[in-house]
Length: 231
Image (cartoon, rainbow, N blue to C red; front, side, top):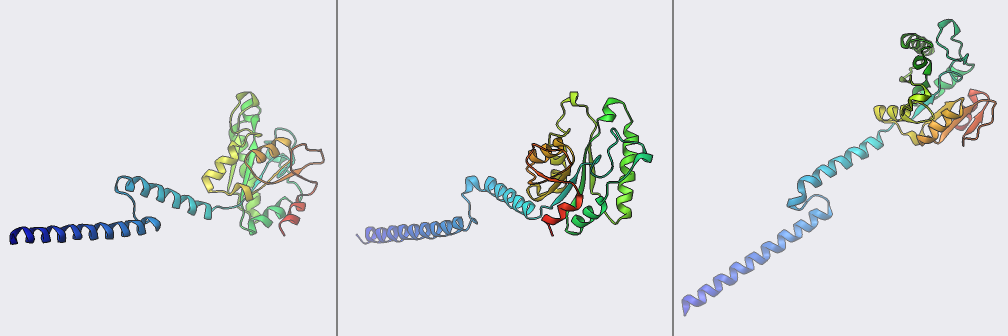
């Protein structure tokens, strides 16, 4: 009889211990889950990876940079149609002042340009690069750094993804340099420039032309007019 009683007491103590252990584990598990610190065992590895990815995305968004995107011919230099000869490099009035203004505000500077003259055989890629390098050098003489020039060498018949009005070149810059497109700026002189900026979700779009544009943007006749919205 005494053995049976001792056995029952021992079982009771053991069961009580199990209940207490389960309660403590459940409490801690709930607490850590609420704090996103404890994960169910079968999901722990995937959840941890998801958490790391999410944190990296948050950091990337937090560290995004603003950019000033510029078309080349007609905005930076005068457009004589398929410009590539260095002796024809003539800069648009006020271009250095407006770009320096935004550089001083922390904007990265990009040139986004269609150069189908290469694809059409009107001039070589080397001639185009020499022309671009001359532009970069002159900006440097004005203490301005051009972060990068993105060029599309295709013709319209190639149906590529980089030729404006498509936004492929802008997206390339955004991915390479972690650009906040929504808060960036695009200045162009053709409707295709404005359409590319619109397709890239750039809200600050400036159409530098005397011609009427049907694309939603702000029209300017002087590059310095862009400063008024950011002073």
